[in-house]
Length: 267
Image 1 (spheres, rainbow, N blue to C red):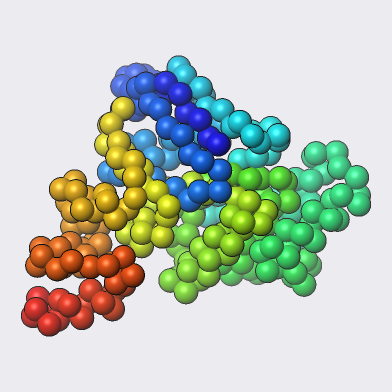
Image 2 (cartoon, rainbow, N blue to C red):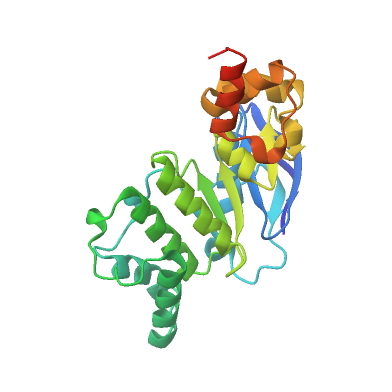
């Protein structure tokens, strides 16, 4: 469980509160997408949960997780390459383990397990700079898992990847929710990312936000307005809504929406 209680935070020097008496609870093993307009505090909230920023008031606790916050929460941004410290895949994963004063046997066990979880087995000696974008994100994930992370924060982490690789990594992360048991918090503007989550947090102000399913949010006036601003699949979904066409949740694919719009001669 992630418990955010009476959280307040502001950046100096203007001290305008990004969050004020903000409360939120996120169950373990869930996948939550945080979205909203620019400069509303999405990345700030992610960094507060990680512990990179400190609340002005209130608290963020992780009951049920024995590890320290530093180990239990992993933060992965859009370009993981800047965070790599090892020359090879193995060196990068082991570096974080050495700082935990683990035995050689335990480090090797964690290394092998993380490689297996992320599909990087056999790539231990690959140079980090030779990895593709998707492989680099998998390495960042493997390093986090080996270090003991059980809460994964993805801050626009998959934006630079093409769609097949993006879908592959999302599928991998979803599998890891069961074993070893990840809780995923994702900062994203993507309509498709929102739909694939268990829960959507749409930030709008210091203490004002929507908390519920993506399908429920996109049925609200604020949700439909956000769809139109998103472009891509989101704007297609808004156009279908304008037609008054009711869609089941399994019919929200790009192909389905484009078919409906073509038959109504809108595209």
